[in-house]
Length: 120
Image (cartoon, rainbow, N blue to C red; front, side, top):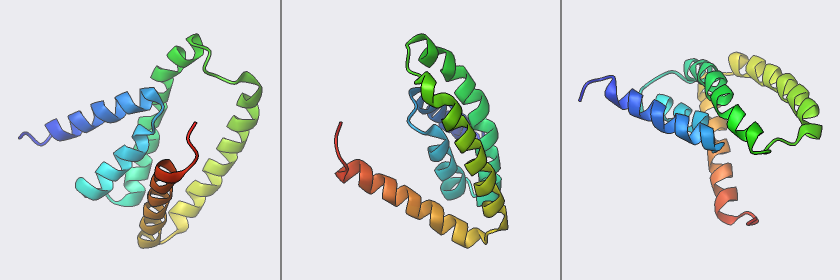
């Protein structure tokens, strides 16, 4: 298999999942760190750049279908920006091994919540 085909397939799959709002960026991080051998911090930076155009491409469809809660947008955006800045600062200062453990713990916690959490 050509070395560019698997990343192309992963990019397409995570792009589709991002459009659905499932968290394709998280899956892209898992692929890059676990299978492609990309260092955690570099993968996080790539993921941030990946997320911007993916989110912007999905946004018009969500706006058109009324899937945005307009009263919560500004507080959510402001809080998200502040927390992203703090978390990015912490991640760049943190030991990579510890960062990987936190990320793995986060994935396990989300998986447990999805399996056993309340159903809507």
